[in-house]
Image (cartoon, rainbow, N blue to C red; front, side):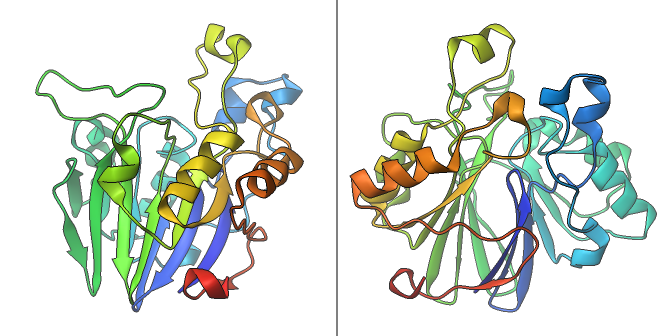
Length: 255
């Protein structure tokens, strides 16, 4: 497997000949809604466009702007891009508006395949689980399996009872580490796993922790040192991919 960090919760995973992009946020859409606020100005430019990544599949965890970005997806569609895109079933309106033709309305525990890779949507609690009137989850995580590897992509995950058991062992856990606090909750910034919680979950799975969602915006960030300290305390192996640089990954003992 090869992994490229795209920023926030965006990653390119090349596994079993399939190019999978998670939560591509490759624009300044959030900045535009917080004009003049330096805490909501990107700390680094997008490393590429979605079209340049040539994805075979895009996985979207939920509809927040830094995960389902209309500018990133719109530019990709305008460039002729039309690969399969999976998103929680209640949150596919933007994809339909942009006239994507291969929309996968993902539902928890209803797996699907792309080439030799199997993807299983997993219930995601963004602080808590949210469902629509039909009981379909509005946020999802994804378990990605191929080449003998199991990779958990959390999206904006928080802990809930049964999550560790639902997934079982995996090789890599891509988890947010920006946590939550009263200030962000008051300002309607929904929280995610803390560094300690992410490390505990990775430890339960015997997985290498890949931290996400910690350095793009100062208004919702976490010092990497805090993640390193938590990983050391938990005895968890931590791997921090360099932005925009493909990283060769093997089984967890080779990371």
